[in-house]
Image 1 (cartoon, helix red, strand yellow):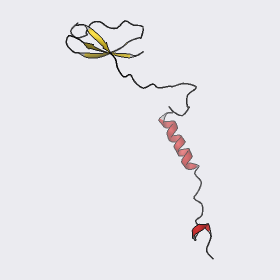
Image 2 (cartoon, helix red, strand yellow; image 1 turned 135 degrees about the horizontal axis):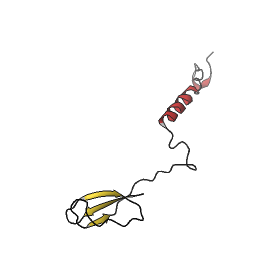
Image 3 (cartoon, one colour; image 1 turned 90 degrees about the horizontal axis):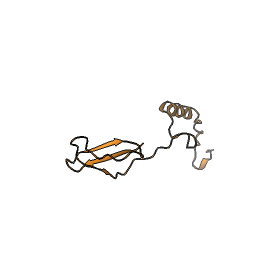
Image 4 (cartoon, helix red, strand yellow; image 1 turned 30 degrees about the vertical axis):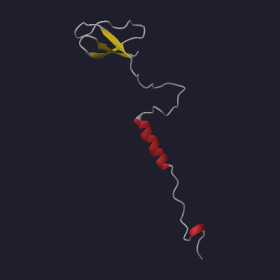
Length: 91
């Protein structure tokens, strides 16, 4: 359900109301009882959750911490360094 923003034409009071899309717009100010108008807002971002979306987007902090620890433990050791430039050992 969306949140709608209203403004009173009489006292200028602005307020938000969480209501269904099917509900009729409010007509009276909650402060003074004057006439209100519903404002057009930019809306909010959409958050997709559930099956069918990228599985790691909304993982819990504990899951992310454990995954980071496991990936750090799996890193291979640094390869041995060569003495001479170009990857050849000096003789």
